[in-house]
Amino acid sequence: MGYMRHHAILVTSDEVLIQKVHAKAREIFCDPFRWSIHCNTERMVSPVMCGVVNDEFSFFIAPDGSKEGWPDSDTGNALRAEFRDYLESLRYADGSSSIKWAEVQYGDDEGETCITADGDAARRQAT
Image 1: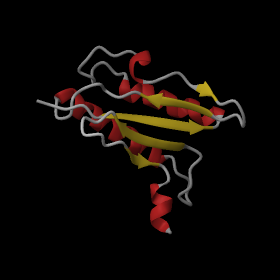
Image 2: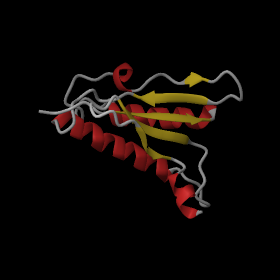
Image 3: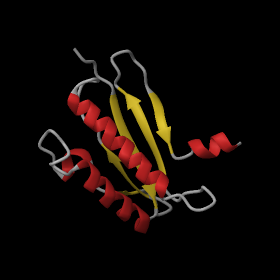
Image 4: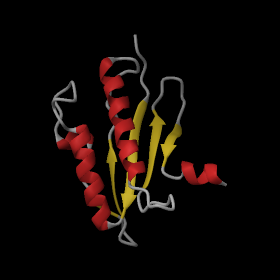
């Protein structure tokens, strides 16, 4: 028997780069041969939205909705890891990035809410 623990990824960048990253998210999360439930773009990856100021654009990847330990949850974990690896691959030579992102955990049956991964972790570790 599994328990609920939601994971979502939030992504923000400039207008050009966000389109590239959004397309990759749609590729990773919405390929029906890789996802065990019927999936379409609107189900997992939100549209790109514009912030009110500073021309920053964002989207999010919704939780898989499966209970921890179930096959769909394991698939979601693997796809989120693949997407995080992709985001990390876009870093500049100096380690910086124009992509701001965080994976959050919430709605946990045990009340554990936290940031599980983020684009600033490497910079924090370097200091």
